[in-house]
Every structure is written in C-alpha cells, then in structure tokens.
Length: 140
View: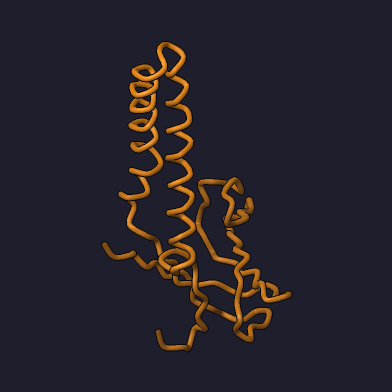
C-alpha cells in the first residue's frame, strides 16, 4: 500500500528555533481549532507549526507535502482490533479464571491500543506520514 501525498500552498508567518509557523488559506475549517496539528481561526485560515531545517523567512511562500498513510490498517488497529481483543480476553479469562476472568478482556484491549500507538510511532519514524516543506520554486 502506498501513501497518498496532498500538496497545500502556504505562507511562512514566523520562524523560531527550527519551527516554522505556516498559514494555509482554507475556505472553511470544520474542526474550528479542535485539531491537535493545526490552529484554525474564525477567518477560515489554518496555521501549522512544523519543524524545518530550511532557511525560511517571514512572508515566504512554501508548498507543504502532506503524506498520509493508508487508512485501512489504522482503522483496523483503532476500531476492530480492540473489540476483538476485548472479546477474546473475556472468553479466555472466563475459561481460565471463572466469572472474574472477564477482566482479562480489558488487559487485552489495552494491549491492542499499545499496538496502535507503536504503529503510529513506526509511521512517523519511517517518514511514511507527516508534512514536508518545500520552497515554491523548488523542484519535487
């Protein structure tokens, strides 16, 4: 499975300590400031704080390449696997430990969330997800 790459145009609003504060013109932001990656304003503008090693300056136009990993493995890890682990843990726990063994399902479910966290970390470390800044006149 390959990652989808979305390109957005933005303007650097400030740069400090290797973090670029980039504004992306959006007609409307559905999350209204509730998302963890961006800060949405009431004027329909979105801001991203991104790590960069480029020599950027305020007002410079940039292209943001946003890599999104395939969605199906993430959906399976976050929604399907925890339910399966919960049910398997309850069944195994009750078979081994009697009526109170069902609590093992909670342990199995927590283990599945740990797998989802490790998968997310793997995607970030291997650069299969994330945002890359390119100068507007730079070739891909």
